[in-house]
Image (tube, rainbow, N blue to C red; front, side, top):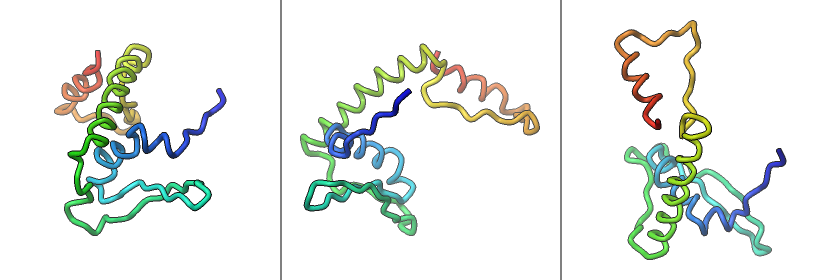
Length: 119
């Protein structure tokens, strides 16, 4: 399958970048960011704020644009997760423990429930 490359402007405009930062990178003290040069060429890079104990955050997400981006991504997530669960049996790909590292008995029921949560 040929891989398509997403335009960085789309990554920002649709809300992927905001939600990736808000839900994943910011709590870890990181920020995925884009810098555009005068010709409009974009470069993706990571801001390292891991020394900030509480992690990073956006200053304000109450504007109409942030709400629109969040709604866009939540709509995409609902649609994609439903399809992934139907076709793959999961939404987020699980990490399979090697046989040499079996699941401790006390966690087996919890793991079973988590693995079947999307069904």
